[in-house]
Amino acid sequence: MSRVYHLFLSNDYVLQYNQFCSEIQDVGWLDKSTKISWASSKSMGPFAPRDFVTRSHYRILRDGSLLLSTMSEAGLPCTEFREQGSNPEEYVRMDVVLGGYLFQSTDDGSKTRFQMVSLCNPGGALDSTVGAMISSMLCATGPVKFISALRRLSVGAESKPAG
Image 1 (spheres, rainbow, N blue to C red):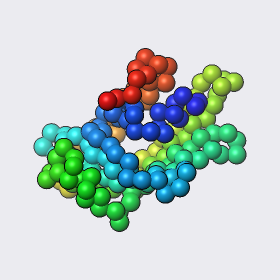
Image 2: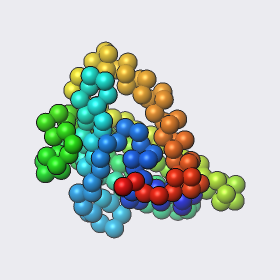
Image 3: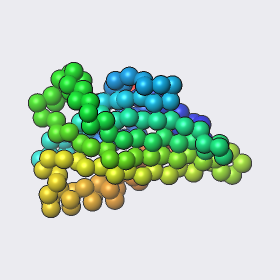
Image 4: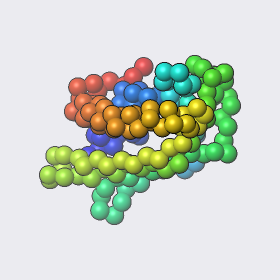
């Protein structure tokens, strides 16, 4: 369980397990368990790349499960990160309304049950009928690819940080 959870503790592996992420930088830590990050996605077809500012909170639950909860920091524009990004003129702000990952040990610790939930407002032209169709397609395929990449990384097939 800790090997999978470890992949979420830093930005070193994000580009390897999240096919949509283009770049990510930490803005800062609010306390030992909560950080703020700026990230951007790639363009998808005719749709501009998205950027977002996210608060991530890491916690160990009473039963030993590990929890990562995320939400947007709408009040932080993070202009300096946006300007340093690869597409500063094109970004559309995306809102991660709620996100969460729960890691639970199973089979006497030999396996990890991984659960995720994500509710996002992609903003811009994706808030349309065509955008909804594309978003639905991404929701159908994205989690499978995400979990497959996590599985590869957690067993060490690609254990080196991106960079």
